[in-house]
Length: 367
Image 1 (cartoon, helix red, strand yellow):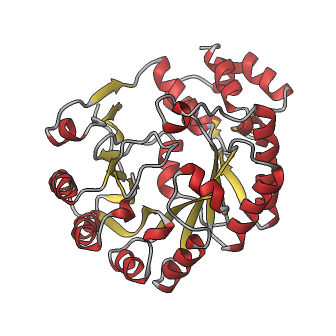
Image 2 (cartoon, helix red, strand yellow):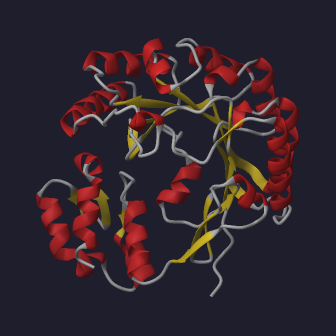
């Protein structure tokens, strides 16, 4: 049976001014002729949707802000009418791309939330990561966005760099919080096979080092009123990312663009991550979500949230009480201080969020 239409849309713009040494997302160095071809395809795909179709939109990449205003404006003007009034409209950017003119363009096209990759406040660390920004660029960009009327700004922070000390992490999180974002996300550095960092022989930091650094970041965030509402995400009251919670609540969404993922009518899909096949409409992979696979996805997504999920929602979706299906494993996880199952809700503890892989493995083994 066909489900209700998704209320969220993700659009992937893969172009970057330069390629960061750690990134594994589908991306291309910006070339005008490539961007023009790509945007024509995207705008054609967007014609399938009626005005006012979506409650949230997220433009990610790549680096969407790397596009010149002359190309960005027509694209945003095409996407904006598809949103309902008051919708959350998120846009990813690099700090060095945001000036007064670009901030004004984003605001005039309805963008209400901007997510920027600060990553670190230290010049040598930025150079190591292959970032072009200087340490002061993020604060300047946030000031431009606020002047243009965009108050909802999220910043990304990376920790776990090779040889990074706790004092250096403290310096980074203090610099981030001094800019007064409404939201921030933090990730440990991943050394992906095939990345430049992997080729240069770098390895990921040990778990005990990462744990200590994350605890510091969490504590500093709490002091400033931030709540950890998802594994990697922290928000001031009222500023949780509505779009991303679509993913984490296992709700359906549309994915547009090269390498973009989507979930519609019980089918998860991913478009080709390669430029030419995507333009030709080839290479899309699909998976029908049913049976135990549906339960696994539900747990994988919902347990990323500090609020978890209602036991009644699980039973309504899968026809069996959660504790009847997972009682023994859930009890063991509760005794270990990782999972809470009282008051009609199933939710990870703060430590459980840190050890989410362990929770999921034990629950999956019970299926």
